[in-house]
Structure formats: structure tokens, C-alpha cells
Length: 110
Length: 119
Image (cartoon, rainbow over all chains, first blue to last red; front, top):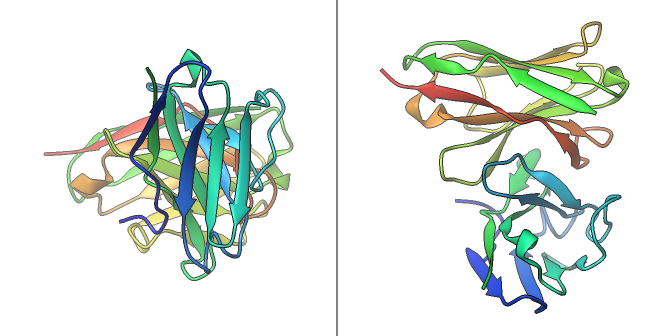
């Protein structure tokens, strides 16, 4: 049972906006930065967003992140077929003294 | 940056295995490193992290006392010594580089090495 909560799935048609939530507690999301990883099936995870809302070089600006209190979210604007993947939020947990991942959200482009 | 894991394979319950992760393309000793695993069809699970010097380590409760993370900065290599293996340790094990110290994000990942625990 993960300490972070994500919806198991999300979907949209090409061009639509999809938002994925990540809910935690004061010991993790409420205190530390949230990061997002994208995993295309059959491949290794890749850093998609760091420090709540920072995009690594090469990540399209249609991906955006935010955090408020003990919740964070990832938004994909202008959804494209190549965005079909699993998306995981992650952060450090001060009580566990370790990292926690959300259970992942599978994004489907209809 | 390149991270290449090796050492995975089939091992019996109760057995041991040592994973390696050869790193290149960055000053290895300057960065903390981590192991993350993914059971078949499941999500990502953090396993362990180690500081750049090797002095500080952290472990998930699920592996504490059974797994040992270490590094050889002269060989640019990260290790994970796994013992008392259980069926639930079956997973694809990824090594990843941290942006800086333990607590920061994972900015590069390897392709993983598969560990199967079965009799």
C-alpha cells in the first residue's frame, strides 16, 4: 500500500488536457518536492518533472506540474499518442527516511 | 550518462545475488545513487540509496537487514548485495543516479536487470 495516492488510469483524445493527481501527507508531499517519472511500456522510467514544476531539458512544455499542500498534479496539454505511458509521482518521506512512489497512473490516448 | 546493470538471474529462495551497475559519463563519486525495483506488472518501489562517498545509506523496510548497497568509486560501480531472497523480491532492478545528495530526484536510469527468485 503506497503512501501516495494516484488514480489508476486517465484517458483523453488527441489534443485534450489530462490531469493526474498525487496525494500524500505532511511527511512527504507536504514537506518535500514532488517529482514525476514517465514509463513507456517495456522501457525504463524517465524523469519527466522535478521539484514540483521543473521540466528537464527535452521534455515538451505541454507537460506541467504543480503542488499545493499535500497534493501535487501533473497536467498534459495537447495530448499526443506518444504520451501513452505510466506516470509515477515520487518524493522523499521524512518519517520513513526513504523515497516513496505513487502506484502509477496509466494514461491512454483514445 | 550511461548506467548498465548486470548480475541478475534465477536464484532459489533463501539464496544470494549481487547486482552491479557500471556508470559512465559523469563524475561518479560526486553523486548519490539508488536502486529501484519493479515487480512484474507492478509499480516502482524504492529499494536503497547511497551517498557519493558511500558513508550514508538508506533502505526500504522490505529489504532492511537482507540487502546491502555499496559502491566502488575507483571503478565507477554501484552494487546491491542481496541475501535471504524471497519470491517477492522477484523484479526488474534499476539503478539510477541522483541529481545530488540522497533526498533529491533520480535524473538518469539504467535499463534494469531481472532477478527471479524461484525454486
